Figure 1 (cartoon, rainbow, N blue to C red):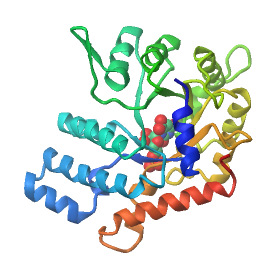
Figure 2 (cartoon, rainbow, N blue to C red):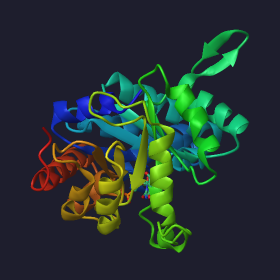
Figure 3 (cartoon, rainbow, N blue to C red):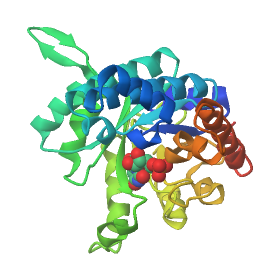
Figure 4 (cartoon, rainbow, N blue to C red):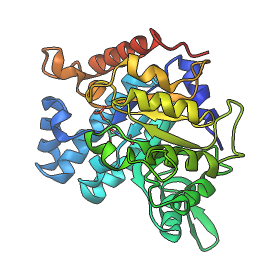
Length: 308
Ligand SMILES: O=C(O)c1cc(=O)[nH]c(=O)n1[C@@H]1O[C@H](COP(=O)(O)O)[C@@H](O)[C@H]1O
């Protein structure tokens, strides 16, 4: 329960950032792609092998720098069942390396269906009186805009396992204001209503750092809204995507943290995975480039936030 496990890992590494594992085949250096395609042919199987090699390389290069990784399910789903099997392997490998794994699945559905998702991603599937785990992530992202009954089954599944969830509140994309910034009858914006509902749903699950097991996604591209949400939601841990490739800066994300430098983690996916494309090399240096980009991000944020 709560975000204590993640907050501890952040404190150990003095680094409140998470590396996204969102590989498209064109992000993988050519020498890795070539070898995989020679072995398995140009197709889904070859692409899965190439991305697996890339993920292992990234995890090895980053595991002593970042506390967490966030694979986005879409980049595995688009390779079919072989992609999903590789996602399961990636999650297992990252956990073996001591990383906290946030499975970015953005799910949300009626209670019975949400329970099935929650079993698959968090607690395991109950079969003939036994529980069988598959993806076994530490945390998931959810789209809770269907309401509290679409979130609660995930919190139920996460209970007793030191697991948790992030619920979309104010997202980083350009269209996020179309619905999320609309004012409700009581004058609050929809994202404020969502954030407060989410904090209420999980009330009572606060851990030693004071955060409940239901975190919130607050995009780095909307710093004013992050500031608003930090003030409204003192018990909510924030996932802040949108740093780097989407234009968010360290000065923008600083508002997500409390006075102790706790309560938030900032994501970068393309900025770390694709760093090798900016070194002028042919990709053989992808691990060093990713590592340097992760260190630069950590040091950039440290100019504004000190994690106590
Ligand atoms: O839930 C998320 O992680 C998420 C929410 C959001 O509002 N915006 C957002 O970009 N994301 C995810 O964060 C990652 C951002 O990737 P980069 O822009 O490459 O750093 C992707 O995996 C997105 O799916």
